Image (cartoon, rainbow, N blue to C red; front, side):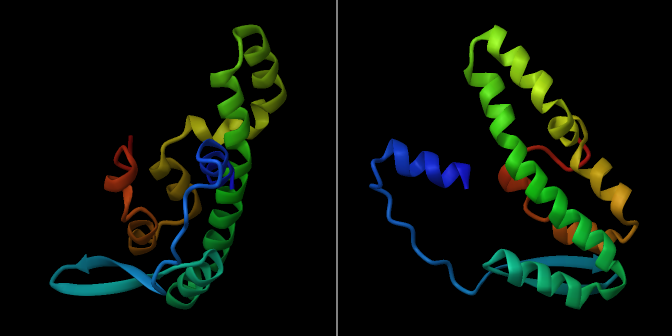
Amino acid sequence: SLLRFLFDYITDNGVEWEQMDNTYDIAVTRSGMEREEFRIRSGFKEYKSDLLNRFPDEANAIETYFKMVKEVQHSVFYLFMMKMCPSFFSKIVRWIGHSKLQLFHKTTMEVLSGLTTNKELIGVLTYMWGDYGEPPAR
């Protein structure tokens, strides 16, 4: 990933990465008094597989979500270039990467609501928002 590349470059490969435990977190959802747990396993494939097993009727939404995540991962390069380059070059990058940056103009909730109406699935997909920034609706 770009982030891993930057860490390795900045630290001259000085950061040693530790493998995470297989299950590293638990997302908890509630419906009334009923409490449901969704174990979050390390690994992109495992996470996707667990979501598909837990929400089989939402397979299309889950597949689309993971495609969008990959699009955003690739699009971060354009966003990075726009912020780091001189303004003239930044305008060229914006013009070239315009279609790749469309998702950056939407909130997480707007994107997920366009994929599914399943509140439990949206809850699981957004359970860590407090660790990484704004609430999903902002």
